[in-house]
Length: 639
Image 1: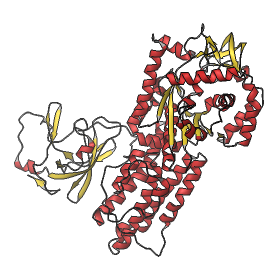
Image 2 (image 1 turned 90 degrees about the vertical axis):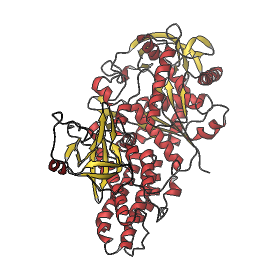
Image 3 (image 1 turned 135 degrees about the vertical axis):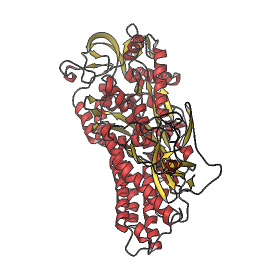
C-alpha cells in the first residue's frame, strides 16, 4: 500500500486580501494533491488563515472593526477566492477555531511543564510587520528588509521557548535527512543560520500591550506569540493528537512555503515539535518570489496598478483558471524567483496551449471527422516503428522522477515535448494526404497521435483539470474524477470505433494588439439609416443568406459580449464573431441551426477574422436569434 500524502500551505495572514503570491502557493498545493491522487495515494490538502497578532489588531482598529469581525471578513474572502478558482482543500483551518485554540493551549502547557518555557526580560528592535524581534545584522539601512520600515525598540517581560536547547539536534537531523528541507539552497541557508547561536524564542506578548491572541494557560496576563500559535495549525488540521487522520498523514507531511518564512518553518517549527515530543514533518519545500518590474509581490508593498495586476480573481477571469494554473506551474522553477508579467502569461498561453496543444486537438478531431466518420480509427502495425508510443511509454517514469525531486516545471516540459512531437509526427506522416491511397495506414497514424495526446492529457490533468477533462471528452474517453497515472497512461487504452465529440477550441489564441471596436451583435437587426428606406429586389438578391450549424462556441477573452463560433455552411466551415454573450451562453449555442449572411466582407474583431454575420431580431435590450422551425441541410439558401 502506498503511503499517504499530506500537503499544506502556510496559513495566510489576514491583514490584507489575497494576491498572486498566496495564489501560487495554494495552486501548487492543489496541483501536488491532485498529482499524488493520480499516483494512487490517500491525500489531504490543508490551507487556512492566521488570525491573531498585533498586525491584525492594528488593521482592525484602522477600519473601525473588532479583531474578530475583521478576521471573519478577510478569512471569508480567502475562502471565496479559493472556491472561485476551483481549488479544493480538504480543510480550511482558522487559528481562531476553538479546536485550534485547545491544541495550542495543550502544547504550551506540555512544553512549559517540562521546563522548556521560562519567563525573562527582553529589549530589542521589533518589526510589527514581521511580528518578531530583528537583529541589527538583519536590517538594511536601518529598515526591515521585507517591510521597508524602521523597527520599534521594545523592552518588556516575555516568556521564552528554549529553542537553543534543540539547536544541535536540528543540525544533526538536517544532515541525516538531506530531503528534509528542499531545494538544497534552502537547506544550506538554514544550516548557515544554525552555525551561529540562535538563542531562545520569545513566545508571548503582555496582554496590556496586545490582547488579541490565545492566552497562555500558565499566565493569563500574556498571549501567545503569533508564530508559536500559527505553526501548530498543521497538527490541528489533521486532528492531533487523537484522530486517525493524524496517525495516517503526519509522517508524510509536506509544507509548501515561500522563502520569506523559511526561518520560522525551518528552525522554530522543528524545534517546537521536538520539545513537544512530536516527530518532524517529512518535507519543507520552499519556493521563490514572483517578481514584477516593481520588485517582489507583497501585500504590504502593493498599490495601484500592481495591486490590480496581481489580484487573482480578475487574472483568472481574464485568462481562464486552467491557463493561469499552467502558467504559474510552468513558469517558475521551484526554489528560484520568477518574473510575473501579463506579457509572459499571454506568451505562455499562445505558445504552449493555443498553438501546441489546442490546435493539435482541433486538427486531429477534424481529420477524424472528415475521413473516419468521427470515430477513432484502427491502430496500424507499421514496420517503420512508432516513435510516439516509445516516447509516451517513457513519460511515466520521467514525470515521476521529476515530481519526486519537486521539479514540477520540468515534468510539465517533458509532457509538452510529447505534444510537440505529435505535431511534428503529423507533419512528417501527412495523414491528410496519406488517406487518399492508404486509409488504413493513415488511420493508424491518427490513432498514434490521438493515443499520445490522450496520455499527455492524463499527465496534465492535475495542472488543468477542467480543460484536460474536456480534451479527453472530445477524444471520446470519459473519466470519473482524476485519472490514475500508472493505470490510465498505458498505451492502447483508446478504443478504436469510439465516437469523437467535437467541442469548442480549448485555448483561443490571445491577440496582443489593440482591440478594435466591438461589432454590432447581428446583421439584420440593424435599422436603415433613413426610416422607411426601400430596396429593390436586385439589391436584396445580393445578400446571400444561408442555413448554418454552430459547431463550437466560446467567449472571446477579455470581453463581456463577444462569442467566437465555428459554423458549417455545407462544406464551408468558417469562424464568425457576434455580440450575443449577454443573452446566450456559448455552451448553449453548439448544435443550433441559425441563419447567417454568408457573403459579408470579412472583418477583424478583437484580432479574430470574422467571416459572416448572424441574423437576429432585436427588441430594446433583448434579442432572439433567427432559427428554423425544423432541421434543414446546412448551406441551404434562405430566400
